[in-house]
Image (cartoon, rainbow, N blue to C red; front, side, top):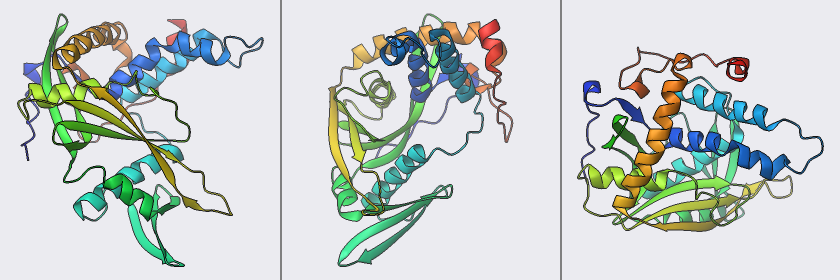
Length: 289
């Protein structure tokens, strides 16, 4: 098993950026297009294109500033699915406030999972099939690597879901799926780039979004089942570097433009005080500036 690279000293880089921040920035860049897809043909859209773009920008700033969020059931359910998979792979107990309990009813086995007051009943057979896709995986691996840009040295870092041999996978749970749903996401570039560039390995051949379409529980069938859709991308290290340089340079330009609203020190190569959490920004400040 590779040894994770330690986080570099802040003086070594100008910006520290995660793939989730790049994903949210990408959604902000795509706001006009997405608004057109959803509301462009409506005679009375629920919000204007400008209002939607401001919402996307507020979400990005609040994410960077680590503002507390109300629990979202769909997101927490995905977190629990990931945790069950890791527990099945490694035979360990749950972590991070997640409670799991195996039960048997009528000869079938299930897992009760709970997080933030949400409770779900999962089909253990299905989740065992999902876990079997990652034999002997390295799970939740902390990775990071430097990226030189024309805006300064960037530290790209994060936690990849599953790493098996020459393939990295990120588990995504969803209610609906169409092929290439995650094409505009940045994990497929950041994680392979980081583990190769840092020297953790010499090659990553593929990146897979392992998409798990979950059923909705009902009174008649409260058990959550699922279908698996692998969305696979061939990896190219130098292409990753070029794409990451381009998106990071755009992101940095925006960061400097909106710097007055960003209270997180880490993204600018610094450190936050213990217990730091940000205050949600007033969206009107973005609209009126």
